[in-house]
Image (tube, rainbow, N blue to C red; front, side, top):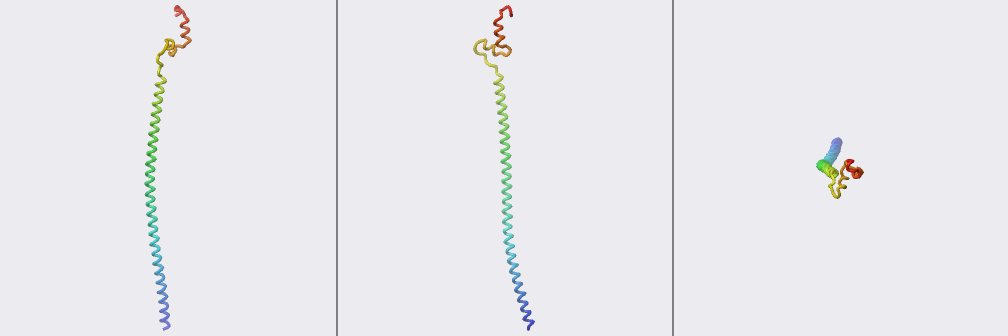
Amino acid sequence: MKQTSKIKGLYSRMRYFQEKQFSELQESHQRMKTLTASMDKIVKTLQEGHAQLSKASEETKKRLNQVFEEQHHSKRDRDCLDQDINKLFNIYHNMKPQPQGHVMDNLYHQEDIKPNSILENKARSPSQY
């Protein structure tokens, strides 16, 4: 009998520890499920964030390319405008003045005749020509 009670005691202890281990195992399993669910949420959030960053990056690239193109066209337009202004300035600069006023005034505008040579020509007599 003594041995039977000893065996019953050992059996009840063994049963207690088995139930305790099983309970701890169930709690651990539940914590693992909770952690797995949390990790899944984190992964999903990271994937969504990555997708948003990729989209924003593409939009930024497109906008930068658009701004670059606008600046390139603007520079080209400025260069064309500068060329047109230079052409107009050259045309204006190369225009000969229109004859106006006295005949002597018109002579002064000719490049090969200087005012002093005109006066010298008037001072000469017809025989000196």
